[in-house]
Length: 95
Image 1 (cartoon, helix red, strand yellow):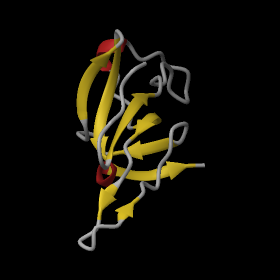
Image 2 (cartoon, rainbow, N blue to C red):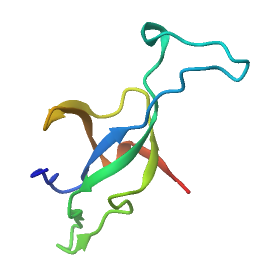
Image 3 (cartoon, rainbow, N blue to C red):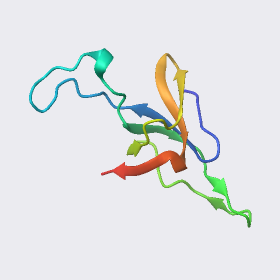
Image 4 (cartoon, rainbow, N blue to C red):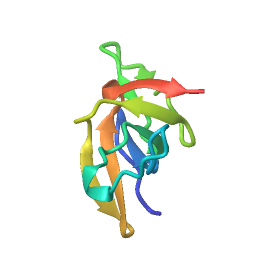
């Protein structure tokens, strides 16, 4: 993939949504909510402080993250649906 986000933006692939509940009920695609967890595919270089210093991002490619329900912009890159979001939209890293 030839795509690199700029500044403090990251490219995220959503993880697959659970198709069954804990009780074993199968949830159809139309009733599933979009997952709020994803994997960072690519990350920008970071932002610049007021003094001009580069502040690197806290996330890196390969990190699993949690983000807000309405975070990011949906894009299609190489036939795959991905999200581009600012680092500030990321709620945390799943370890």
